[in-house]
Length: 313
Image 1 (cartoon, one colour):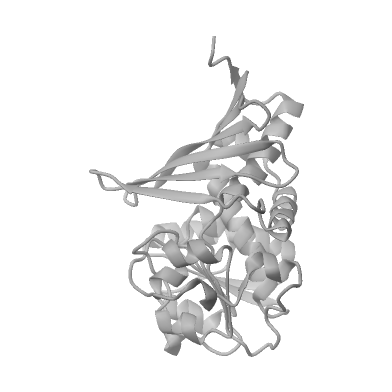
Image 2 (image 1 turned 90 degrees about the horizontal axis):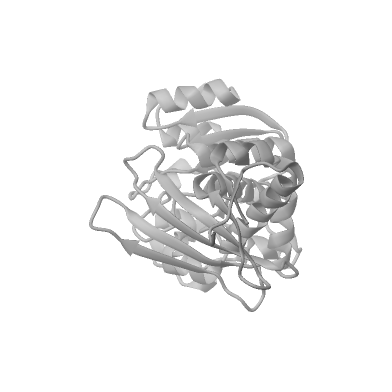
């Protein structure tokens, strides 16, 4: 039997603390050693792209995921698709999960882990540029990991920015540069294809997390910001150089000083001085889909939530 888990089901099943713990464990293991994940992207004859992430694997987990997404920036939601959770022993399709929800949760909460690992230790003013679902989860995760004294928000849609403020509190800003002028942590989660921040916008001690650069052509930070960073971290060097922040700045894999896994394992010190400028630029890895899909599936089995179907019947 295959369990179908909708967005509503997943919002009932997922717990931020449990998801943060699962993602942290995955980064410490650095995904599935020896089984590099792949991101396959195809242009479409429509105003969007198709993306597949395969295989989602973690050491010691007898299951894997395959994710297929459609990305249509002008649509709402802009991301639609499905995650297939398979039994690793015989390939049985255990569950079909809404990929937009899993992707927002794993991307946002993994970014919260990276932000917390690199930002200076203090009560922070957090700035958000791009007030969508991923930024929602970054703010939720950060508030579980560290004190947040204030929130400043900018989005191209004033209505979306105001709705974000209504959910999380804080105040609105008129531009990305205004956010960076006031926030010690800046989270960018946009579809931008031109830099939103340049070196003149970045003050000493700032931390920047750039989430929007997950495929070729997207860019949120000027290349000079990345080159000048005291610590530039990614989730995966080859992928970041193929389609992430390194590719956007025409930088090789070794330009990343560290991966988040290296920092969480204490193989790299991360930030060593409060005045340093740090950047975290993840692409998003297939094993993250598995980590949260497995959590949701096991909880759904325990609570008998979601529709079960026999696809072979």
